Length: 327
Ligand SMILES: [Zn+2]
Image (cartoon, rainbow, N blue to C red; front, side, top):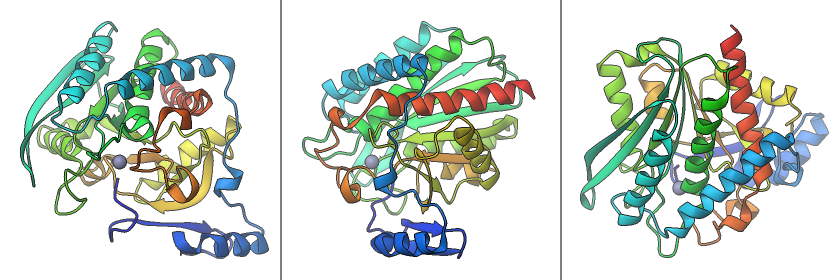
């Protein structure tokens, strides 16, 4: 996603009672204002210590294990041998499941020249079906010295793999679900002039061109959802109806703190799909460490993550899929 300092990125805390958007640097003031106005806030201090049911905790542990395996490969920027290894691990695991797996290898033109990238798609359900729900995330990491992206890149890939495993076992999920792993989300140099979201832009373009976009009911993208202090913001570019529905479900499951009241705008892999007319939501915790200070640093290590956070997001996503299946 975009750097906090870039013009594309806006983040703040909204207090519904007074209807103001306050920028990140004013969050302390926002909290004072919010409490004076009697409305809820989703600040880091309130961040989740919530626990999902045992079943999801166990799946969360599995996601944490996968993250550890990815992190052990080292730095995994687009085009690296380590990321290629990770893509093989992901594709091999998916091919054991009852789904259609495709790997789209393509060449992206970047400020550092042509880079080979791979999107991976696993389709559950009849291939020609309509009403598809897509759950996506990126698996590449930002090219920075020593950066292994446990949360940023690792957590999304791990959660998607475990979600695929769970869907394969779940008879209650009857909607077609496509799980998508994007390459090239991170900028190669700097998040501007199209130097970002290479994989998602390519897939959204293809789905728009061949009519697939019209068969997709919604897309939910996950990013940085492993933080032990889970605080998923209400991402403002996202489709408002999908966001409201997902928050309603999360709260019905008791995850009031993990699914925050805070509004923020983060450019990410969901934007190309919104532009393609697909109702899309970005689930991102962009409050990683004090003042988001672990983001894009060597502090983004596996000890900052928790099985509970993975479990909570898995639980909510599955409930979304279950309720869609009942309609
Ligand atoms: Zn990143």
